[in-house]
Length: 86
Image (cartoon, rainbow, N blue to C red; front, top):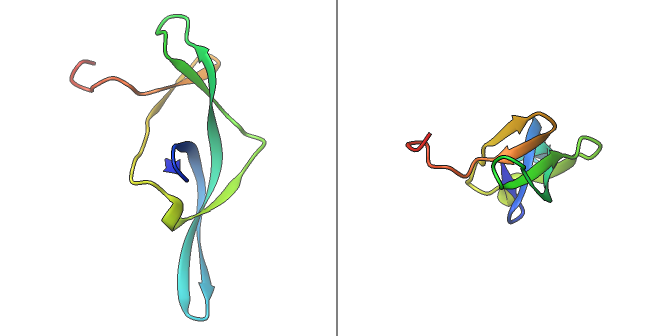
């Protein structure tokens, strides 16, 4: 998912916080960061999961975009192709 602008992350949990009868939705996110190193075969940027970090993000900070990442040998590649081409 994308959050707080163009940051990407993996959703690891969802919880609701009830404050005086008002419910607020939050997600627990593990960030995925661009390594700025191109994949040798595809020539696109590679990404890495920051497994040592987790963030709590409120619903208003979540963008209505769901990026797709493919896991290759030791890194991730963000989906950048049109599905009809594949």
